[in-house]
Image: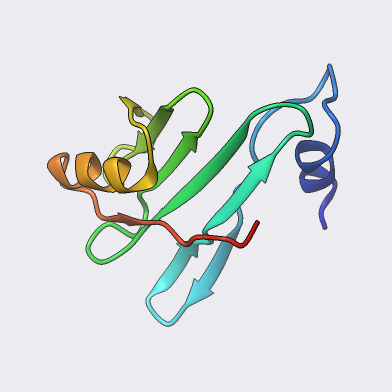
Length: 108
């Protein structure tokens, strides 16, 4: 576990925030790694990763708020805010924006 993962995956720290995104290497280049994060007593979020023609796309969905952000493959610096209830809705709306993202369900 990296230092940032330790800070963002454990107890809340008042001076550090953020979500750790992991990236791996494939035969077609880099790929975001699907993950799930939570802060004890706080929010839980899901990471939806780009696939097919948009491997650079990534989505972050806060389950409790029903709010997410889609970072598009072509313009990752201009995220789209989505009000969605679940990963399936997120993936559907991402497709409407020309992005293919997938969700890998993690055991609880």
